[in-house]
Length: 232
Image (tube, rainbow, N blue to C red; front, side, top):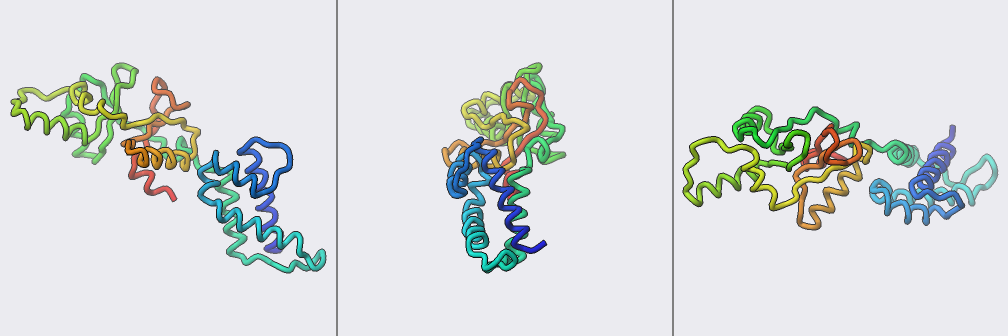
């Protein structure tokens, strides 16, 4: 198969995917499809410049044929591989439920802080979902623990017994440091959610994954800022 044929096949598949993203049936110019789809898909937004360049090249290939068997602009193999790569990403984007599914270490409000400290020492975790029975209560972080320690030190309070996580949660609830998301959300949507939280000055410490993004559903994964930094 010629490079131009591979390129046009991938371009047509991308066009179909963009139409699916914005749920449109009638014909629409490719540039318009990109404009609308980028509002709904972080992936389209990320590769907008590539897509527009592909559209320009597609027009040259289709409208400036010298003959049926002679194309004036035969795409370079790197261009073909690039459009095929983006085609695959758009058609089958990675979902958070696939990439970040794991057995999450959770705690109960009446658990001792020592149990969390042991996990920090052993596994270097920094975010800990806390429940009361099956009801989600909040996310404890090393920042919240540090705030508790600072309060104890500043008020010169003698601690005779290890506090429970309910005590530590009081130092976290001043800020909403988490968000529940659906397992069907794309990895790139998750990255966009985190980016928007940073821009608002309210950075999430973790995105918590459940079936449909509901707090009462079983926790099936967790995404930390460090995890998202590894997403390209």
